[in-house]
Amino acid sequence: MDERRLKMELAVFEKINSLDKLQSLSKHEKIVQGILDAINNDELQLNDPLPSVNKMIGGLGFARETIVRAYKDLIERGIIASKNRKGYFVINGNIRQQQKIAMVLYAFDTFQEALFKSFKAVVGDEVQIDLFFHHNNSDVFEAIFNQIAGNYSLYVVAPIPNDRIEKLLLNIPVFKLLIIDRYIQLSEDHSYVVQEFETPAYEIFQKLKERFSNYEEIVFFFRENTAEPNEIVNAFNRFLKDSGLKGRIESSYKAGSIEKNKVYFTIHNPELYAILKDVMKNNWGLGKDLAVLAHNDDIVKEIISGGITTFSTDFVRMGEIAANYAINRNKVQEVVPTELFLRQSL
Image 1 (spheres, rainbow, N blue to C red):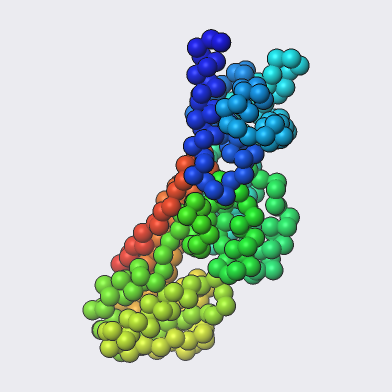
Image 2: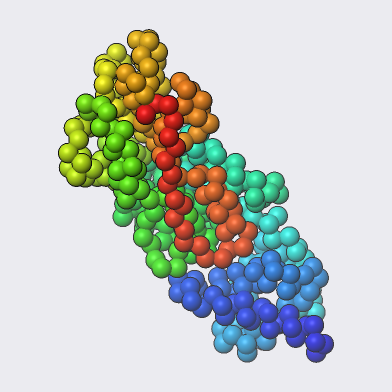
């Protein structure tokens, strides 16, 4: 056997064995992913031979049926081909071209659009990305997964934190799933790129304490049973208790109910725009007669009404990290920081 072929076979075994730490992967899945990793790292190239079935059995100790099934899977994906009496060969060295990604998000808000655009920019135009939205509805989420299960090489999912959804996600092989935006605990092996809510929100409120104290009350509009995170409510209530400032939570903003000398805080963009409309109608000054705070930053909030103070994670960065996982499949477990953006409104 020539030296290069031996080196290639050793690289394949090394890549497959490196996946042993992922206990949730079946033997078949380890073979498939190990070969894909070897191709992605240029250790296997176009027209290179793969180890024979017998060598794979000897090198890995797996059953013949497992090896054959894995090779068949790669043949169906158009990655390798079988040549009579000559074995298996790589016929497509562009793994990214074979990528078909399902991205399941809450809704297509401006910040989710920023996440998607940054993700797409990094993975490239040759990768197919199909977008789905569950709108924080478990029935919709389950219907989406019944439709897409088994059809994609990667699932990038903003989950709904409940047992029903966690059970669905656990059916996806670990290396084919990336949790994004909202964190849920699946296993130590699962990758995620998410934001935190309660601790960062509390810290932001503390930073704004002096500014809040210039107004008589903080009014937080929060809609229960929606995609808006309950953790921010917990942070708000804890902040009020610790600071001694006056505040309350209302389920929604009623047009025309705006008052001077209050801070209005909302997560919901249409509600923010309704508040700003009433501010303009009354010819009041933001940051003077009253104040406004919003969650999730975007370019509109930078410029509207002289600038809205927000706190937000970096959705562009989140999309970039997620895209790098899609390309290299190296385990990632990262919480993207939340930042405060001080502007005229507070």
